[in-house]
Image (cartoon, rainbow, N blue to C red; front, side):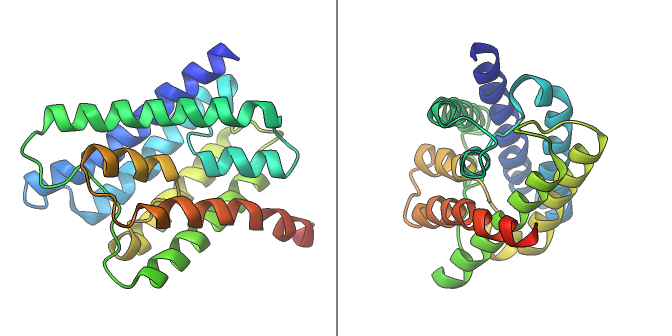
Length: 212
């Protein structure tokens, strides 16, 4: 278990550091990375991390994914909280590192709705549900490994960030949003990015039963 938790913490650190770091660098460089580059950064880092840590922890890096695996009886309930704690630690370390590296950044890559609250809430729920369904259909047990899993999951994250990022931020991951929001002291709409992915994890159970 200790090796799995370390893998979750390190992997989540890398995910948040690279993803939100791309957003910060894009801001400071007047758009040198671009929205396409930011979406690609999130998708590629997820794909790489799956290959790096899939055998160690299952490469969840997302509380919604851990909850979904548990609800679908593919992950022990006793491991959900330790996984979530490790993911939070990794995410906070990443946001603190970004803040230290870029003290003059306008933001730390927080996810903030650009439209209405309900619009972003619905988008985040749909995006997370779609991501979870992909993950659960290309993995075995609670493990995310293999050529197909890495490409499919990474491509899904990149695709969703590409088309929905300008509206809701395309978080799909509570800790990815919680850490920069708290470190950057911008928590007004953080509840969207906690509630919507969690609800999506619960909705994955009846949806997958129907599909099967």
